[in-house]
Length: 516
Image (tube, rainbow, N blue to C red):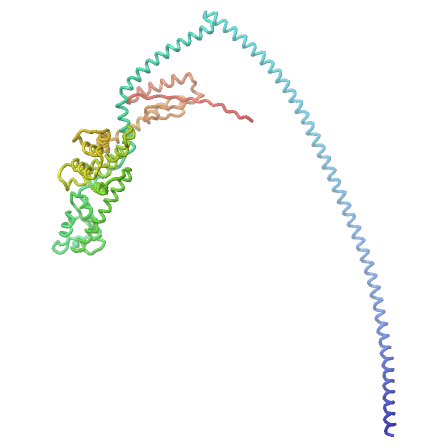
């Protein structure tokens, strides 16, 4: 029974489930069909709207395409019209150019015909001129009684006689000039040497002045009971003068080297500030070493400047000592260097050994470096030094003969004498001469510039020639001779000068043309 009830229950449940599923299926189907109908209606509406939009877009595109085609057609037609117009204008220009060329060709042809006629006329005129010249020549031969060849011979003979006369005069002038040539040449060599070697000289004095920072330093230099000043004077051999001169001490002594040592030592003491005998002794020793270095440097500089090589080191040192030696207001070292240059220049002019000449000129006063230390004149001392340091006999003779103590044995010795005299007499001796020389050159140019037709004038060759550039349009070739003579006469009237002055006139005419 229980099984039957259970089975009936299961069957009832299954039947209920089947009924529920059937009813649910039909319900869902009905709902789905309703949704599908609504969707189909909506889809139809969308399709209809799309169709309508497509038709409108199609019409719009067609309208735009028609408008674009019309615009392009108009542009093409406009461009075609512009090109036709441009071609028409070009054609008109070409026609105008062709007409102009035709007219030019016609004018050239006419000019050519005219030129041909003119050439024919010129040829006829040339023939007429030749005939006239021939007639004139025949008439001249008839009047003079000479043929053209006879006339040429007569003129040549006349010119030859004149040239012979002028040549004779020139020969006489050259003979007179040759008599003075030796003296003139020697003066020229000396003047040239002086001109190339112009050195300023500074005269050394027997005193040196040392500036002090204040007057209190004077008391420190004197020291207690004068110990400092006595120590300085004893070590240097120079007198110190301390007077009322503000902030200055005077060093007095005839030995310039000692005076220089004292000056350097005193300046070092002033800078150091410690002034006492032991410090003074130290500074004097340092000053001596410094002066020795300066002396050697100056000697080497002199040999380098003059180009004199191979001197003994002691001779170089003695040359440097000449820096502190003066003679008649001249610095002896500078004087010796100048004499070396002058001797070398004159030796070069005469073809003599320049190196030996410079060597002799540089060493000619070497004795003056130690003449206050040794007995005898500076000449004898210099000869002894040159012999001691193995100088050549030519140099020794030049040193010995430069004051005429012995006869010169070479040209170099004579040149050293001349150079020494020139250098000793040179300072201030030529100033007035130079000024007058410049004034003479200016006066020469001024005289020439005052003449009509003169463009420029130049006084050259130390005033021995006046070169004048004249204006070709104002002065012709025939007038040049007269103008040169007038200028020469004017110079003779207004100036005083030695020898003669050459008046040289230059006239130039240029014709310029360009080949194209």
